[in-house]
Length: 156
Image (cartoon, rainbow, N blue to C red):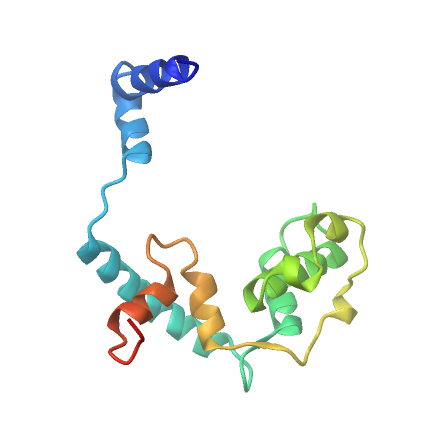
């Protein structure tokens, strides 16, 4: 009963706003086909794989390399200084390498400072598998689930 106003607004947005309703419907009611999802993921993985090999050091992408690359990306942005970009790099590196919450890094702690360009870790690396997983994290299918789907040796 309490959900009725929400449902009425949802129906109004999906059917009564002309072309805007078409857009809302596309976002709210996504069509999923395994073939399209797998084909798209495979093509994006090829691009990701090539990008990783062009970017990596000897063993992967270090936090300091990520910091240098992000400094280049944000070089035209005057809102973030080098230390703020370093904090962004640290958070993103931890997010790609494990999980920020598991490492004790939170967005709140990054806002307080504590990381500068000179303190970025040069020893830990993001390897190809971590890079692939991070780059496909917003896919409708996870990288790990695709691997399990085609792994004939997996436990069922």
